[in-house]
Image (tube, rainbow, N blue to C red; front, side, top):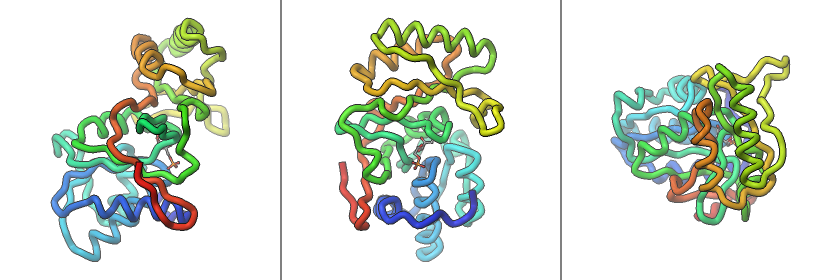
Length: 235
Ligand code: 5RP
């Protein structure tokens, strides 16, 4: 995780543009995923060059380790209390800035951090911009206790909303369940197109074993979309 990421001009352009939103002394949330990794590298470079202080909270153990290895100081969200800005990646961004997140199984902490911030800004390459959410399988973090029953309840809830399919448990290559930083499991919902995201979010949140789903509705205030030619577009 601490290795320098493979250079991607779109992710790099979005990351560099996002570092310009950071002001000295800010309380900053750091996201998770490959684009967030590029941002943390670029942020650390800027902090080193300009020598200013920041207070950072991380959305995952992986990002915390990376940030600390690059000289950024990490505190818990509870130590900081409230954040000025969170910069994070996304798996899908729609024109209303609603998101699917959780491809890296970090969406629970990501949502807690983003909603404890004055602003959440997404950084992504242009492959993440969609007209309608849903082609990326929607991640849902569930408690291991009774997870098969939770899966069944989600499946029934999906059928009630007109979606087919069975939630798929996310597994490591060796077959063990993927565990989140909180020790929970992840189910991925292959929906193809989400017609009514608030109704889906409400259904998922009503299932007892669901900890959090990856729909981020009305949370993101701006998206910086990097292009292959190194330019950015703001949504
Ligand atoms: C992790 C996330 C990531 O932000 C999302 O998966 C995007 O990752 P990447 O920048 O690697 O495409 O939600 O849970």
